[in-house]
Amino acid sequence: MTASITPAERSAELAARLQRVRTRIRSAVAGPAEPTLIVVTKYFPASDVELLAALGVTEVGENKDQEAAAKASSVQAQGLNWHFIGQLQSNKAKSVVRYAAAVHSVDRLSLVTALGKAMAAEQSRRTEAGMQPRADLDVFLQVDLREQTPAAGSSGGGAGTGAARGGALPRELPDLAEAAAATPGLRLAGVMAVAPLGADPQEAFAKLAALSGNLQKTHPGATGISAGMSGDLEAALQHGATHLRIGSDILGPRPPVR
Ligand SMILES: *Cc1c(COP(=O)(O)O)cnc(C)c1O
Image (tube, protein in one colour):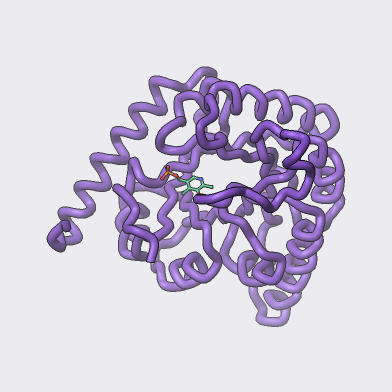
């Protein structure tokens, strides 16, 4: 395995990888707008977040509340926006709104309700503590882009083996959007998806772009498209991604799951 390296060496490594990803983004961007690069730091230590912040990164992504909360409270760097991108249990909403600027994985009405309640509680907590109120929470509706087979039905949770992907069914989006838009403390930012394993990312992201177009007919402010990871950022950008979530191509291969 890798021998331990100094912070300066790690910083140089991160800078080089970041540069490479930024070059890829630049050559793949379709329109005039620059996408937001979210660097996914899950499984990597808070020290890496500090190094990334020093390299100019402002958006970081995490997928587990326990890990994210610990990192967000230990990182000294100012001006970071934390994006929660993993499956979220409703009972973690209260914790997440303490540090997260955005949640990309909102896929059910009960979670919209929980996040709304958590935001109200968080604003009261801040008022009582003499703190400034926080900004509204940006909410991306996560869509499950897997082909729906009749057998799969609408049970949702059966994400199969491996990475749990989550997401609402496309037909559930209008109600979710209505609920998020109507909930004080939440700002409906747009849609999010992970290209299904084994599927053509071009097809998946084209479908997501169409869903985004539909959503914007009723919610013109919900222009965000959170799509694209290390392996498929070019395809995502071709289909209008506004937010990229890039982990391993910047941080390196993730340590094996403990
Ligand atoms: C881990 C993760 C990413 C980053 O994936 P990489 O392939 O490492 O770039 C993006 N989105 C979600 C939802 C993730 O869980």
